Amino acid sequence: MSSSSGQPQFRYTQTPSKVLHLRNLPWECTEEELVELCKPFGKIVNTKCNVGANRNQAFVEFADLNQAISMVSYYASSSEPAQVRGKTVYIQYSNRQEIVNNKSSGDVAGNVLLVTIEGVEAGDVSIDVIHLVFSAFGFVHKIATFEKAAGFQALIQFSDSETASAARNALDGRSIPRYLLPEHVGSCHLRISFSAHTDLNIKFQSHRSRDYTNPYLPVNPSAIEGTMQSMLGPDGKKKEPESNVLLASIENMQYAVTVDVLHTVFSAFGTVQKIAIFEKNGGMQALVQYPDVTTAAVAKEALEGHCIYDGGYCKLHLSYSRHTDLNVKAHNDRSRDYTIPDAGLLPMQQAAAIPTAAGAWQSQAAPVYPGNDYAIGAQAPIPDGQMASWDPNMQAGRQTFISVPSTFPGQTYSPAAVPPYAPAGSLPMGIVPGSSFHQQPRPGAAGVAPLRSPQYGAQPNFRPAGAPFSGQRPYYGQ
DNA sequence: AGCACA
Image (cartoon, rainbow, N blue to C red):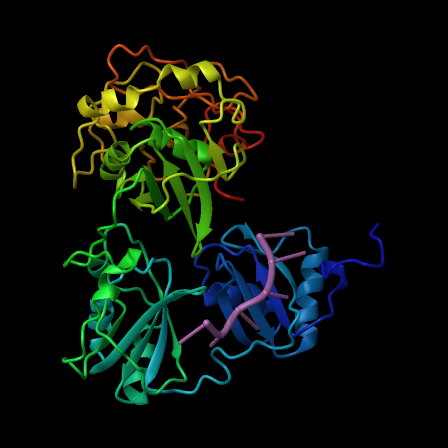
């Protein structure tokens, strides 16, 4: 089957280890879930979760090599793959013989905690919030925050290791109270360990570091204005400079959100030129490029905090990117350049048909109701059959785009549970396989004849193979 | 879906 030499370090060629490397784990996979999966095979002496760029890998160390071998060989021959929350987990021997650090060994208590705040960007949790949370356990001397591969992190210095331990024991694995977070942040779990530091060297009071023992420490002005995430208002909210490119983070992504879904959503506000999707901190983010700042601003206002699906799924959080022109592959599953006529199976005439519509419609249509849960472009008339489920929900004055009655991801969906771009029942128009692109007309663009149907039929994510009806359902990732 | 504390 396989050639015997020159193989990379792949599955069949690895030397056994007590440590197993697990990948393709679900988001925010907890240590408990890991242990549940692994403990039938032996005693687990150490774990390391949320590893890797996407934080969806983990290491599990068994007490005994044979236990690790039994787990690997069990799943090698099992018809059922290893799963966590229904997601297939791939297991192999780690190329290291033990897990370094973490809980079991080398975790000596000190007075300084290393806190990793999962699932947030640096701008989402202000240093004041961190200070507030940790002050519950004693006087916080100093805080330094930074962004590293592991995510947003903070070093928090207490007077002594007892206080630090108390804080760690109480907060490790917990989430910062929601009322202290911006609305768009869902859960943000704290991973806390002890730092080897004993005294942090804080040079300035800034958005990223504080010394509470020295109120006279100079404030660093450049630190306040220098970087993107430092552009905070007095309330700690982001005030990044406007841009024609939006950065969308998608929270609680229980359904697959594809380029096409995003295109549908964002096209309601103007011509979407380019989209790029990528992973960040275990979540999904996307850059969406409009031709101009105004359109982006309208879209941002209207979409911020809204969910693509009802039930709080796929909640959008938008900020301005510092990009102005994305350099993306013309057509693949992670990115799209709609300005290139051919590449995206883009019907050229359609692209050309709406050259300046964006400017025209947005002033009159899509009045924005900030802070209102009404959705996107709420009063825009819907061209019949267009993007049907999106807008009708709004017209009905519902709180979210789509109703998903009593349905949970991973369950079988009732037809009513189809996502917005897929009206219950069947597609509005005939699907042309292979023609997956449709330039959506602007809602409310008076006089613009509705272009024909959205044709998403070719998107596998929208229609799981063997789906019993043609209505497309959210595809709960694997 | 592919190996980790700055």
